[in-house]
Image (tube, rainbow, N blue to C red; front, top):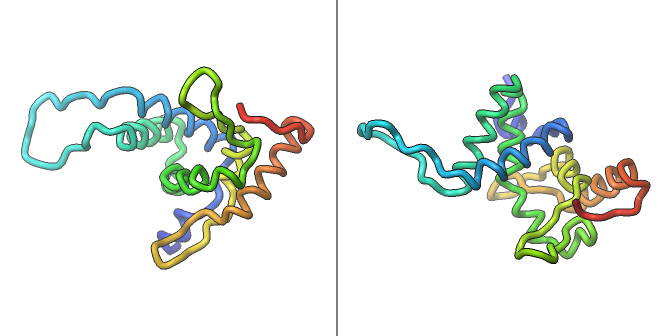
Length: 150
């Protein structure tokens, strides 16, 4: 049987990952439905992370993508590591002119799907050099190397 950490850090299908990033973002904006009857037990707090993850899990189940669910969710949870090192990714992350948001290139999202996750004492984290290498590779495939965030 495969070790759980190994399963979680496996690369995933880049197109499916990009699709699930979009599902996550859409679900994160919608409030969780209130339980019909409150019973003793645990309930998810209605915060964007929980809403996004729940929406992603539901979408993966509908698609039959349960096999890749753990590594997709793990990579989604760790995307902040890439955004915290934004200066390393140049044209792959850009500020939006009309809002406070940012645009992230599809090449960078695909790179996050396949980049190496390296263990440390706190657990696996993105190998940012590998993320950049893959982002450049996907960028060259998608737009002839012109770059740009979506």
